[in-house]
Length: 560
Image (cartoon, rainbow, N blue to C red; front, top):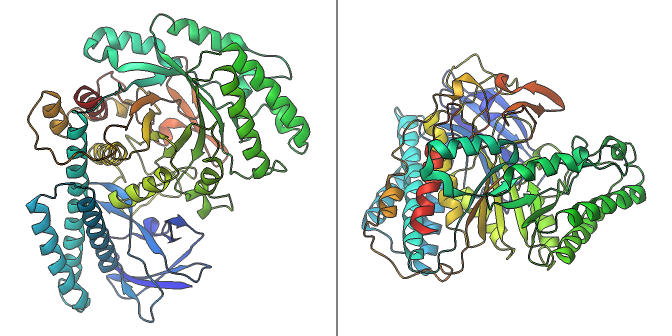
């Protein structure tokens, strides 16, 4: 099945469009072949081919001036005889989603401001005129892009309005405490920071020793508990909750070498895994959170996915048998299914559906790594993000999010390097908007329980020191935290049972003794971190809190 689109080349560079893909129902990405041809001096022809014969949506990267490089999607499409105009179809997709969300929110009793209704009617009229206008007419591209940009802004405003009402309503119900965590390797850094910024001291209530099976059992039966014990000793007296795991990450880079050599013998692997898990769980029985398994759906020699699912169930049972109050989580990498664009992995949601009925699995940890690398994914537009989160919510299991957002990206990665422009795909402003977008989406989901932020500080890169220094982004939250009056709608049914916590997780890759990431893995090769982009921290390399930090702190003071 082939889809054809005409597009203005000045606004859609080919090095971004190559990442476009077709998604079937459920927004599940599929392998898509992307090709181009010239249609004139200012326009090109985009062809997206996919082995599928049902309707779906087309997702296209667009470098938005306010929101950075983001996947925006069309409405549901079938192949047409004549090429469709890409900008017009993206605008139609934004308009369709706005109408759907407004209808749904009315049913839920959310107050829709008159300004939004008026803006929607105006945008609908502009879209109707655009749908019948000749795309070759002078000024068509400018008019279409202006409408698309205004619809994107409208959709962000819609999400903001809904979440403000929802969070304001929560203040009148039971407000369980949220806690913000960090990587155990940064314990000393956190203690030093808390002394200079005492106003943030009580935000930190959870920590994550990021040690793997490879670290703790380098040779069969020889355990290096001293590494973990040392981290625990440094944290004693702080009353932090502990989150351990994953017990097993089904990735060659995270498994012990002696296990990698025996992957063709599932019986031996299983025996060694459960011996190690038994020792680990018994040694730290008071651990509050356990991530029992990750990379379950990845391709890994003869260890079938069905076997890994079965073993994950058994690991969760082991955790609960030792500590019935502990939370056993299953980690899902790239939960939107982005990996299906490159390999034939089992869709993450399918694994979630198979394990959701398991009473020993307490929830899912969705690992969302935003970036330009092969193991990362680009951010989705506001409504797509909310739709994807809704699909995990429908599993009726709590979910947590492990979030990594780039804070100082570059174009050094070969797949994305371009000589046509020096404009980066993300800037400090757009990173701030990404945090805002995710916080809005997460806080309005009933099943959301916590945020695992992957890095307490930015890396040691010098250019990370002068990142976000101030933000109007937290203004609304700061006002609410101060007790400003807010007109409340009817309280949503799920307002009283939403429990939100903010946890910390480890960043992937190597770290130096101060906890700063020094290398990450890109397609199997170790790359110096500074040649790519530093991971997103809640503080700059200079130790100043960034807007993301201030936002989370303000939300906690106001609602949690």
